[in-house]
Image 1: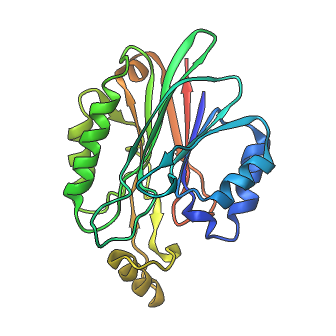
Image 2: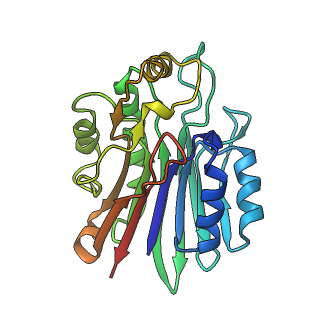
Length: 250
């Protein structure tokens, strides 16, 4: 089984469209875990391939579909899905499509739970930890004897933040991309009203790049004990994030 996760950066980079069309037409991946999705990207996906279905929940806090979604091949049957919204952070902050989408899929009488996540950015890592606690509690309602995958943009940028997030998700879930390098490159960050983005934009304007490990893949013990796992970064610069390619081998 092949899985792919990417923060699409709302198709901000000029090479994104050609890249995602190629990925979809190639049909190499069973599941694509996407963050910062827009209606424009959804239309692009639908036009590029008829062989993927889309799980993209409506977010009443946002007033539109959430910015996280799962693409899955048609041979997988979605039997149940779940959604958590983190669109509202503070009453004075703009609402964005942060959240969690998960689905229980079956194929050949086998069940797998796949989920995508986008925790909010910013200078308050304790909020991300709280969101992760909520997500874990929701996932633990699933049958842990089936394979479970959690992938996406965890927005880890502070010292020890990855370690603290790992502690929350352990012992049930392990991070499998530990040997991979940074995924986020601040040189490619778009202009937004957020303070931390403004800092990244300023550094980029004077030629300074900040690279962070913000994107991760976690799996449960069923996978680590029964499957071989390979993962790598894709080098294509089609977002301020790099995509992670995951191969689960029986």
